[in-house]
Image 1: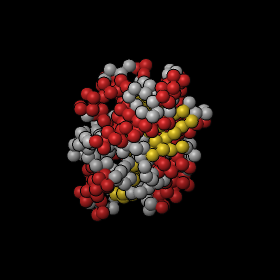
Image 2: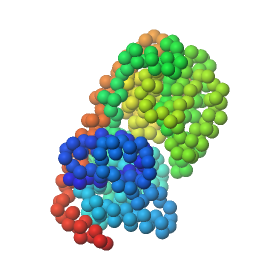
Image 3: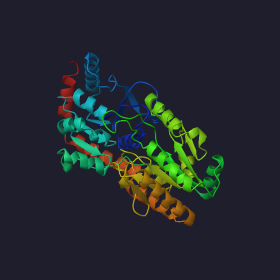
Image 4: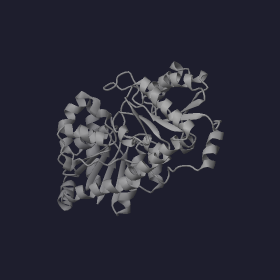
Length: 400
């Protein structure tokens, strides 16, 4: 089959790479449609020899003739590519794909990387009807599937498949690697190290107004209290602003919490390889207000237990013996969880939690297993649409 995959970013979304590789391994032709411009996702796909096409649609829905012209150009592009299956990720890409392919008879698969957009009352109301344009919705978490079931989506066309993590690339480091990672970051062996790996996003307008969704402010507020009681501790934050607005928000957080004057907090931006930071850590923290599975999967894969909020799919990433779940936005609960992790660090029990985290990730979230499941769904979905009829229809309308 010919499969076209569409995303709204050439930088993020690197979790599609295992899916693309699996589809190509099975002999399918895969073409990825991305916004024009450089990005880490584009680089990865290019190194893998994957065909790419620049999207004529900029994935911004602003009222005006320009948006309509871009959608029309996207429609012409998809007609020219003549896919058997069109797969898309992100809500803006889903809107563009649905509107741009109305009446074309293409099998459409929406894979949902997170539930944030469904937290908007306006979007939920419209999605109740627009989701009917998708043949299949692959929920990236059980939480997302539950949201779509509440909108009337039937289970038979709502499989749950995580994006997962590469458990071969992310592995528990040996003792020498851990010690070397700590030396590079000037961290003594007896210091308790918490880590948060996440881009910084500016506050959204439709949901969680005025607050960054990743919960950096929640963790930094909790850290003030925790570190005052446990001075032999360090917090490592890894991640820059996602865009200019995100970087502005990060700088505002740095000023608000006086990070420059706090020796217990280190914030690293522009990091490509996060593994050496995980190697130095004792516990990972994901205090998001909205999330799919997030950094907890990478942390678990390297045997670092996690403290996660109860937002979105995060509770799915830990078991009682591998981590902690706290209410989203609750500073006091996060402080208590940090104290629990610190006590186990001192007693030696934290290492057992880490191995339990690794086992859970291997069993449920291996990206190879997840990619095979996604490929199965795409093959079945494409098989439900008579290819010859669909291609004749696309060919016949290619000049329209």
